[in-house]
Length: 519
Image 1 (cartoon, rainbow, N blue to C red):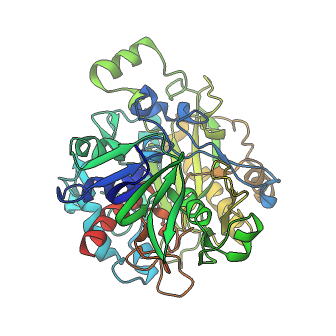
Image 2 (cartoon, rainbow, N blue to C red):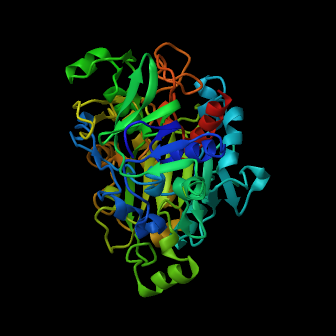
């Protein structure tokens, strides 16, 4: 692959959105598409076995980012895993298929991105297997969205406890409103992960007009005369005859824009990069879902702890059933910290295991976890350049709990989770608090949050879309001030969704392909 190789479209990042964009654009045999991925292939067994995802953390499949010290979280530097392989974070995540709430999209007030506009793109992506009450899901899309094959007995008890508490049951989680409780729909095909690479890229790679390059860590976008003309990586240059599309995620896309001279001019000069396009909001408006867990011992040996028995391995290998099919986050509740709110601002994620510190230190002690997630943080942060060296990680400062009220809402959620666990339906499965959780009054719960809260892996907003002059991209995802350059991933979200971000990322990829083709 020498200098001067040219394609019509050059896409950076083979993650959730990038695989969708590449597959859709390459449907046209008259155009050529190059998809560049910094990581390697998605060939490790742990990628495809659902319950094994935590074993991919801090491996070559992971960017293994860390945040700046968080003043409101006991000055901790938090670990942020992000997928570095084909499929990106869709090859590393917990496979929870959650679109969000209709109020998310309608609240952006960006033409073409209201719920009525994006819902067809969710459906286009989805290949629902199983229940589909009201025809909520698409049924012929590439991403297989299925029901869990072997939910844990404690998960069924948790769902019963939610009903006992009077929480409304959602017949389908992904309708216009997600307020209520449900078993989690998962992006799995017959008990195996269905990543964006599985869904989109694997079928598309048969096309002669699609070139996929792994190990291609792009160092900058080449800009000439106000236009993106290609990208550079590893001493190579690839030209884009029509467009460059950044799908490198909420960390990678702003990082690459800044390395290319698109950002806050003063900050670029501080690290020795000459500004090309003044866009001060590149990297700003970083939002993420912070999560703190209620962890309790389980008196019965029925959880995922110690699931690696010969019998369970055989069940998975022979029938694709059993605990290895678990996505760990098997049930969810979306609720409001204040009844006057228009939509949920808290999520409870039930795990039939003691999921602590990202599962990096697995235990054989049986326990359960209810993760409390702040869906609509008032706090925001930024991604910034720490160095002009493309190989150096950027500075990541999410600014957790900086805004007044965020901590109180998480504490409210922890107390609500305890109420659900106190239901009769959970009586046989809930024992004493399990470290690091100790329970207690509001002050003790606040200390627990500060000492133990972690990311739920949903950074967004760093290349914000909007109609105002400050927005990084316009409603067609074009970078303002640069021709032939778009961003297509969750970095464009004007505000973080009340749900998980994999489904919105893939939706954005689907929509981006239509926007590009429409242009």
